[in-house]
Image 1 (cartoon, rainbow, N blue to C red):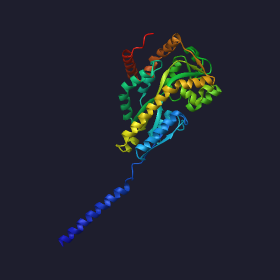
Image 2: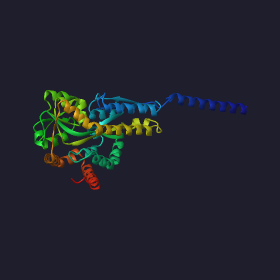
Image 3: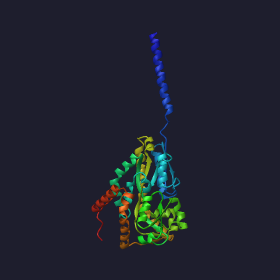
Image 4: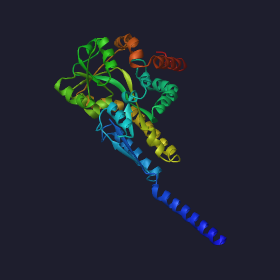
Length: 347
């Protein structure tokens, strides 16, 4: 009787364990399939979009089909601020953002875009490399992971009337992204005439005269055809339009840990390709626009000094209102360190 009882008890225990394991297997997905919905202002059918599509294909390949990157190109999900909001609600999982979008997560990124503060790509990226760990840690604490850093090139002013000096620009209505009243206040305090709007309104606004000037890198102005209604480009590097690719931490953590390094490497390779394309093709874009009727307004050393003075005069408001004060000071400290280590060649 005791043996019979033990046999029945063991059989019951085994059946319970087998049932439990089967239930767990049925409840778990066959594979860790993750779809990352990523939005960007990068226009479709552009060289930059091709790089992002290659990254998406690489993610599928290296993950063995477990991770799918679905791209929403051309600002179809709205400006950067809209995209960041959608990531916070879960409607999107990632984005390729400009500094305006990254600043929604940490405004310290604006320290790399202080107007007229940098003379070269190398200076900007040397400062970024110093500040990146702190910025990325701050973004991580807010629930996002930075996959790469890139840029769209130097911002230039594209205008309906030729603009050589800051005073010339002050006479025109200057487009500014909506949703950043402090930046608007800085422009206004400096004597300029900014008008806020969505990026989707800029092209039509230039056509109708709602806007008479905008700032954009040459490749963006070429791709978006801003130059067709703003046929003058001021030859001064106002600021670098930095950006980053980010995903939500929740989504990143759903991806198996052994797959993440390969995805990160693919994203970093894409960032390097984006940077290389900007360096290689920026001048090509300018030449193409010149052939289509664009006039490049020259800026000599004396006039450049006027732009530097106009920018630095606004630094007391830029520092604190636009760039966090500690990040502002830190960036210029690292910039000066770089310049001491890499002095400009004597003329």
